[in-house]
Every structure is written in structure tokens, then in C-alpha cells.
Length: 290
Length: 275
Image (cartoon, rainbow over all chains, first blue to last red; front, side):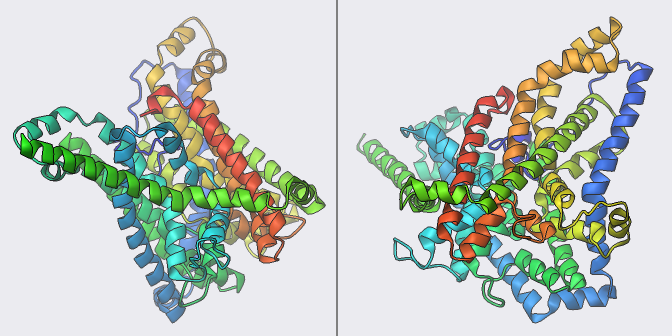
């Protein structure tokens, strides 16, 4: 179960840090001690220069007009509407992913569909594809010149479709390994005792898959909250209508409102952290449960 | 017997429904949009595609993209192997924190990544001015773009290498050390050959991510056409300037790269990661 929140699809653990691997116990020679010290300082310096100091600077600048300034910056009508849109569409996207991702994983594992390998590779494509290309592709199909006659450009539905595209693999890749390991014996036993497919699904499959589904859904939610590239072209970035939080941050920065950009960024960082912590707790809980 | 047949029929019905819904969903969301990019790219034949990919600005964008991705991947490979060795082979205070920190970049919005770098290394900051004083411009320039690309792809090599390091154990490393090999020799002769596949896998993932980064690079590059414009930035800029041919051709190039990276990574993926 521990592997359930590390998405193996793109080979990447996506958010939930896998439990720190236990160090191989061994007698260490002094040289290794020195190597460890050098390695550790190298790694910490690198992370500090690239990640930690810059992120600290974001939080720092969000408070440059004091806490009340921070609250004001994230509650201006534009910021509030952009955050609301981002949160609502992320919840919707996460929910759709929970259902569709599980269904896709089920088809990949249980359904003897011809061309499953192709389908399986296809699922990883949204992770491999640059987000701007995803946006362009979706705008081509669901834009003003849509061959399907469906124009979602500059609408909230367009934002949702873009988010669905980039988050597609998360639930699939967390649920798939669990489904593969799930023994069909239990289901057969239940069937022989007279349980219908519905009962079997609700009583046996669903409880086993739930931690993985929740983890994948949380990952999809976090990704939706922070997504930028895929929404740029299709959303049109209309304030109060289709502008998502990261685009709002971008615009604030362009118009030299650094404190405002940092404030909304800090809210996004807090959401990410909450999801990370929740995932970690979920993982520990699932591991304890066995 | 009759009820069992009914149950079987119902089950087959459910199976067909789920399958159909999944296939329609994937077609509408993935297959059709990507197929249409392909169609739009070659709508007017191959010649205009080649023309738009060989203009000076596209060539420059390709060059910038490759240079930035190259340095980011080199840096993250060195970092990734070091961090994986630390996490797997050593115990130290704050190991859990370091482990969590490595995944943090994946949870940060690309725009926030860009903003965070601008706030520290921008031209109006102390650090930025000091670096400019010795001739290094970070923001609106290549170094900043490399840093942004490093930021977003930090975990990829670590997470590819660490499980394999754990799997192989350190028996051989111990034996080599006992026989008098120094740490560098042990690493080159024992550790590196056994993690080669996983390392290549991590590098391919990092490379794909680096070549395709958009948001973080958009912020730190300043989108200076002809100077700091990468291929992803070119796609957006060309599309918005109604040069659809170049936009689609560049997008096609990126799709092609992504597909190749995906297929190569599938081949390289270490067995223990193949769930």
C-alpha cells in the first residue's frame, strides 16, 4: 500500500514523499563520514539556493504590508474571484478524476481490452507533454474553430477541460497498482455467496481501492490548484470569469504588484502544504492499516 | 441458474458501459486533440512545416530550449545521485524533512516558482544587483531560466535512482571498500554501473520535463522574443500573433519529443518501478 501514493506512471513520486528509506545498516569507515558531510552540505546548499530561499522570499513579500495587507491582497474582488474559481474548478476536476481515473484503471487492469498497452502508454502523455501544447491542442478541438462545434474558449468549462487533461494520470496511476495486487479470490468468494456485482464493488473493491483513490484525487486537486500553462490559451484569462489563481499571480507580477502576487502565491503554497501533509498522513494510515 | 445468467448479463453490460465511457473520455480528452494538432501541422503539406521550423527565430528558440534543458539536467543529475545516496545509504538528522523537501517542487505552481526566483535574484534585489555587479544577470537571462527549470524537475532523478540503490544494497560497495577502494573508485566501479538504467530513466524524465517547461520559464525569462524565448514560449507567442503554422509546427516538435521521451522511459523504467 505504501507505493500507492507514489505514482509510478511517469516513474515519479508526485507529491507524497515516499517514506524515507531506512539506511542500510553497516559499519561506516571514517571516509564515508566525510563524504556524507560533503554530500549533505552540497544537497542542502542546492535546495536552499533554488527552492528554499526563493519560496521563503515569497512568504516574506506576502507580508510586506503586514498581515492585514496580506488579507487585503487575497480578498480584493479580483483575487477573491480568481481563488474561488480555482478552488471550485479544482474540486470539480478532482471529483471527475476520482470517478474517471478509477474507471480507466479498472479497464486497464480488469478488462481484457485489445490494445491495452497502447492505452496504458497513452495515459502518461499528459505528464510528458508541455502544458502549453496541451492548451493549444484543446483549443484546437474546443475553441472557436472546433470541428465538433463545441466552443469552450474563454469559458469556465474550458478551464475545467484543460485541468482534466493535465491531471488525467494521477488517479489512474495510484489506483492501478492496487487493483493489480487485489486478489480476485475475495470477489469470487463473495460472488459464490450470492453477492451481485454492485455489492462486490461497494463492499470489496471500493474499500481496498479507497486510500489510493483518495491519494490520487488529492494529487489531482493540488495540481489543478497550481496549473498555469494549459489554461493560458483556452481561458482567455478574463478577470472575474476565467482567470485562475496562477494567471492572476502572473498578471500582478507583470503590473509590479509584487506584494499582491506574493500574497496569492502564499495561499497556493499553503494549499500545497496542506495537501502534502494530508497525503503523508493518509499514507501512514494506509500503511498501518496494512 | 436463471438468476446467475441474469447476473452475468448484467456484469457484461456494466463492463461494456465502463469500457465505452472510458474510451470516449480518453478520445475526447487526449486522442482527438493531439490528432488534430498533427492534422493542423501538416494541413498544408510538409514544406511550410519545414519552413516555419527553420526560420531564425524558431532555430533560436530551439537552441535556447536545448541549452537551458541541458544545464538543468546536468545539475539535477549530480544533485539527484548525491541526494539518493544520502537518503538510501546514510542516516542523519532531518532525513525525513529532506525526503519531503525533494518532492516539494512538484507541488508548487510554475508561476510561483518563477515569482520566487524573481524575488531573490531579480534586478531590484540585493542579490540580483550583487550578481549583476560581477556580470551575471540571472533574471530575464539564461541562468534564471536554468534555475527555474532545475526547480521544477528536482525530484525526477532522485526518485528514479533511490529505489534501485535500495534494491541493490551495499554489499558490493562494502566489499570494494574492504579491498581498499576509495569512495570515488567504489562509486565509479560499483555503484554507477548498477544504477545505470535507473539513472538513464531519471535523466530522460528530467530532460522531457525541462524541454517542456512553460510557466516558470515564462516568468523568469521576461519572454524576450529572439533572446530568451524557448520553444514553449514560441508556441504561445506565435499562436497569439496569428502565426498558426509556426505555433502548430513547434507544438508538433514538442509532442514528438514528449512521445519519444515517453517511449524511451518505458523501455528504461527499472523493473521494480513497473508496478
